[in-house]
Length: 314
Image (cartoon, rainbow, N blue to C red; front, top):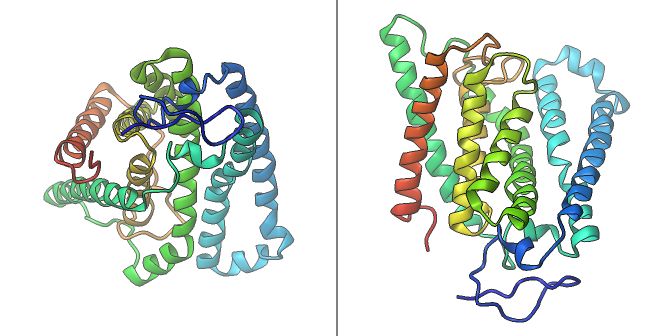
């Protein structure tokens, strides 16, 4: 099946023998590298401005006093604000793609018109299931060693209500991150390098760096986790030729981490309540453990989701 690359000023062009590929879209259109740098400036400035406004919204809406009295309301508002500041990057990203590249935001999700929601859902279910399997296995090991399975878990109706109030923002947040990292930034790097793996490596470094805030501390186990999952997201995107599979993995990871494991810590309710990761120095054993676990999960996902066709059906 062939795909017509987008024309420089519109949405269609002459037929091309190349298969449709999200990653190669900008290279096929011969978009200049400086347009991507300008776009990143627009995204950064726009995201910062929107985040500042979102932080002030509870105060402007006179919710601050109610949040002090109601722990549940506080958790909902704080998570919506936290995730919304990331999801709002879709707005300046859409402007940058339209102004500097002459194409719609949708071109960061798929090279073809339309979205494959089924692909995203299959991917989320498979990855979320694999993560849950790892979590249950780890919990049973803790029980064997005399530790509680759910050290700070809350009742499931409370967690379900919290998820219903905030889960929609998780969908927007992971879509924004994937559109930026595996979409826009990856398209720009691939336009220069022409190599999917050369593109994936700096994207993974940036993804890990931004998710662990500072390179000055020693949480290398957390960086290893984000670096590894970023490589998987890039590989799946390159194989699928579109972004929905990566969005599904990211969604399954975040839903499990927030509502099941509780990695954000208080005041956000979760089923297990394991708490936020400790910011203590990680040794080689910690990093090796993360790499082995993530390698096993990524390998299972690739075998079942890609090789066996449970997710990517090509």
